Image 1 (cartoon, rainbow, N blue to C red):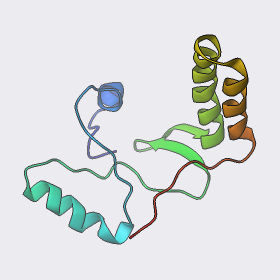
Image 2 (cartoon, rainbow, N blue to C red):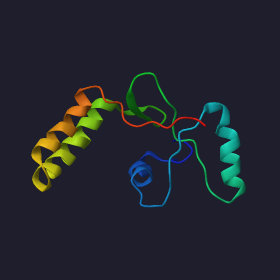
Image 3 (tube, rainbow, N blue to C red):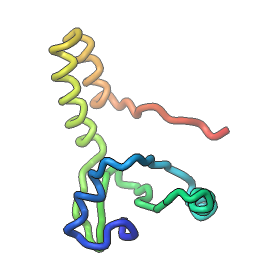
Image 4 (cartoon, one colour):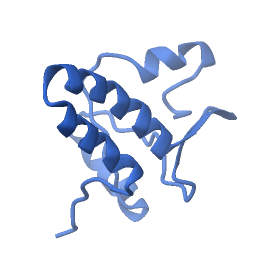
Length: 113
């Protein structure tokens, strides 16, 4: 993140901009090769983070500025979706989907091929 945010006052501008982009999670051993491939094609590539063993999202910019557990962030996200879905669709289905978070559902993952 330090390579993208040169001044703390620009943090929100960087994190919440509307530029087209994507985030890839790749093995540490392949970071240099993949970023070089993007850059060789004229595409900007930056390392913005790395996995931790805390099951938490942490944002650091020379110091910790945000830390929250993944499960609590997902619950906040899903509660909003749940409220909309409960009004728009079937409340029972919405309740069932929301319970996945507390039931230990870990989401979808791809397999290396």
